[in-house]
Image 1 (cartoon, rainbow, N blue to C red):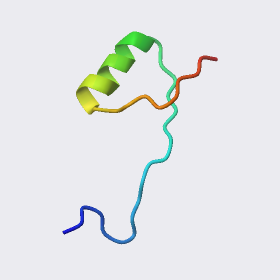
Image 2: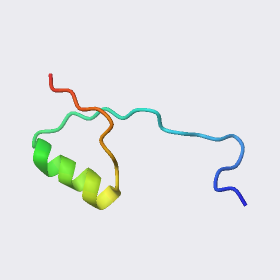
Image 3: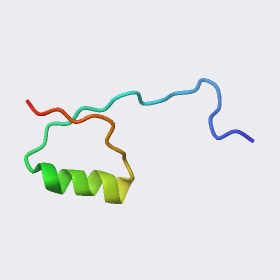
Length: 42
């Protein structure tokens, strides 16, 4: 059994603009389970 069925859809990159970086990182990593692949500051 495969989790994905045709047509497969994947998210390649997500960019977010936020006000409180530490609070947002904690939420996305601890609650949702995202992993940081790259972090840039503008």
